[in-house]
Length: 265
Image 1: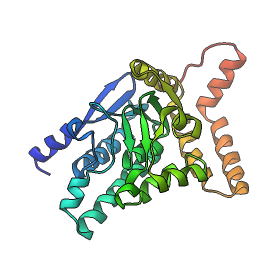
Image 2: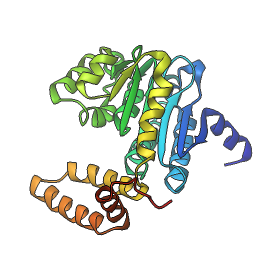
Image 3: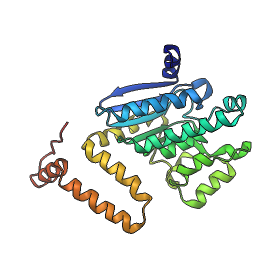
Image 4: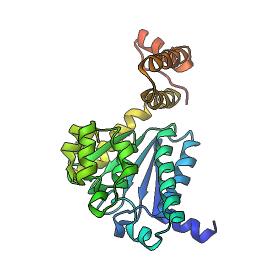
């Protein structure tokens, strides 16, 4: 990648770090932040860098302009309607979604405007989501003859089966309150409160010990795919190692001594 290509990718994705929180902003406002190949590459690179950066404790994913993300850039896909390009694009998209889950830091989607198709997928793939009351969500590909197969993976793991089926097969919009009731987002706030509410949620996690947060996130997703007996076995092993580690020893001792824990940096 040459310097010009690298600069173009950075323009598509902005990063701002403050107090252990890294905010990644999709930055194609004229296209409502549609995911083209350049955005996916920029996201992949940024998530890899953040995953190796111990100074970052929480990631916030947001969109510039009037919307969060409408999904893939359909004009780009139509202009490159061949298996090599389209197949590679969707594989890269899946890798980004998996990176959100696999990175040690919790990821919070900060959603305003529309989050449709792969944009809804980003929300579902994030660990947490805070939405403005004006946000709307849909897996709308079926309206254009394109079933939202990859968005369906995290959406069906966030909301109940029949609700996920309804979203995927009707393509209809779901408002923010309904998205919260269905489990797609955690909190819904007034538009003017979105930044503060997201930062408050992020700060609550930053205050916890980083190693325990990373351990907990890794365990959370792994146990979901296990049989119940294996999930409990994994849980027992995880919490045993955790209890014998420095963070739990300090946290429990602080609780008994009625003081604030002093986590390691």
